[in-house]
Length: 189
Image (cartoon, rainbow, N blue to C red; front, side, top):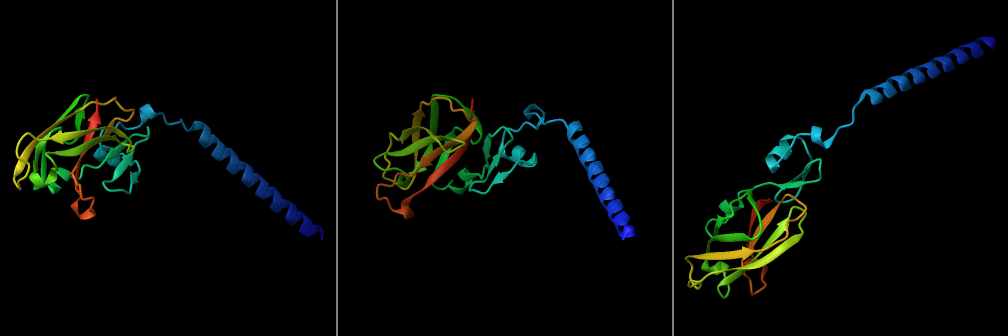
């Protein structure tokens, strides 16, 4: 019986020593590890850089990337190309830095308008609506041709650095099949 006690005590001793060594080693590595400061992280200014830096991509459409400082960058999916046959924007351009008042101009097919206007809005990267407005045309909008439009939006600078300008097709019918919008990614000054 004594032999079993000795083997048992030696086994317990070895386990305790192994645990203590593992604890000391892990503690030492934690002490030597310097905390990461935001200023040490890669600086990003758009979705592509945020993605390349390895920050998490939010599964949405368009995709969004959340940087370490909490800022969200939206992927530019060339939405202007997808709707080029319906609406074209001259100003602001995608990913342009903007400030208030924001002048918006472009051209859209007559079907985009109702009573010579359509709604526009400005949202921040968190989806909060910052400002709304109405784009108007001075020419005949009852056509299938392109008609020029202009609008001016005044807004308070949001806390986020990026957002989107949303141009919505005027849809007085309320029918889903008549809806349409163009989203332009922008950056706030």
